[in-house]
Amino acid sequence: MQTLSFKNGDKLPILGLGTWKSKPGEVRQAVFWAIEAGYRHIDCAAIYQNEKEVGQGIADAIAEGLVKRKELFVTSKLWNDSHRHEDVRPALEKTLNDLRLDYLDLYLIHWPIAFKPGIGFATHREEFYTYQDVPLAQTWEAMQDIKAAGLAKHIGVSNFNQAKLKEILALDGEKPEMNQIELQPFLPQEALVDFCKANGILVTAYSPLGSPDSRAERHKNDPKLIENPTVIQIAAKHQASVGQVLIAWSIARSIAVIPKSVNQARIIENLKAADLSLDQEDMTQLANIGISHRFVDGSFFTGPQSPYRLTDLWDS
Ligand SMILES: NC(=O)C1=CN([C@@H]2O[C@H](COP(=O)(O)OP(=O)(O)OC[C@H]3O[C@@H](n4cnc5c(N)ncnc54)[C@H](OP(=O)(O)O)[C@@H]3O)[C@@H](O)[C@H]2O)C=CC1
Ligand SMILES: O=C1CO[C@H](CO)[C@@H](O)[C@@H]1O
Image 1 (tube, helix red, strand yellow):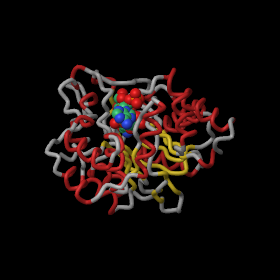
Image 2: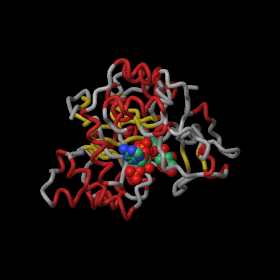
Image 3: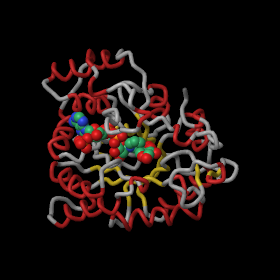
Image 4: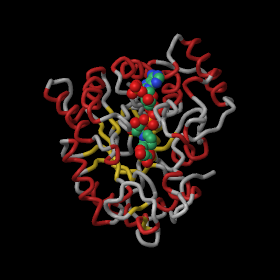
């Protein structure tokens, strides 16, 4: 499997398993199947509320002798309610305890948005912190302490636009090593990807299949990426599946990609995308797909009582 390299030479397997919306009762088995199939990169987050079961899946695979800890690349993310300096390490320690690990390969600030401790999803004004209350620089300093303590080998961010990245890059100290953002052919984000690459920041694509398990009412009119005729036609040309084409699209851009599945056949199918090379004609067709859509739009953080606006998240 192709890898991406961190500045110190550590390698990130370009294709990993996503775990958002993987139910606690399903994800232990899914993680085991994934490792058995050959995945070595697993994407987690405290807010997915399934890290204990992900940890059981990893422990099962290690106990069965399928893999050693050091052969795995495990990412997790700091939730919005733990951005104060004193809250970062306890949040990571809970994640490590749940995952049954003594270090993470990568720890990310999940969103550039802060809630008060214990708030899962803030809706009322008093549940938010503002950037004045908890500057991003404070959270980033705590992330560097985590790395210095050896609890995470690499640190980065997620859902950061160019302005927010510039804020962190302007600080003394460690630079973000990763930005995990939504990337799929309806949202290629060329400028943000180029900015990351120019500043030595690796990129991971989330929701690469268009997150088709979003069932919320407000998503019912979303365009369907996996039903898009351009994607279907490219899949037929390569005798590949639509999912494989969408995953291969990120790999062709040298971007890590983390499709989620709890289905054994699709877990295996998605991994085989690492062997699919899209050609220039395919990439041009996908670049001209003619639909622009963000599936994870951030509107759940920017309601009427929130101090944050969508411009705090997205470049455009
Ligand atoms: N940093 C962030 O803010 C975010 C990070 N993420 C991360 O990215 C991961 C992936 O994104 P996510 O939003 O989950 O959505 P994906 O785009 O990965 O799509 C997942 C959905 O696609 C289905 N699926 C999986 N493989 C195939 C296939 N080959 N063909 C058709 N359908 C398929 C899955 O169903 P089934 O399980 O039944 O196969 C599930 O319904 C997340 O799980 C999470 O780890 C996601 C969103 C935000
Ligand atoms: O990773 C993610 C998926 O879950 C959350 C929503 O429940 C999102 O906030 C987040 O971006």
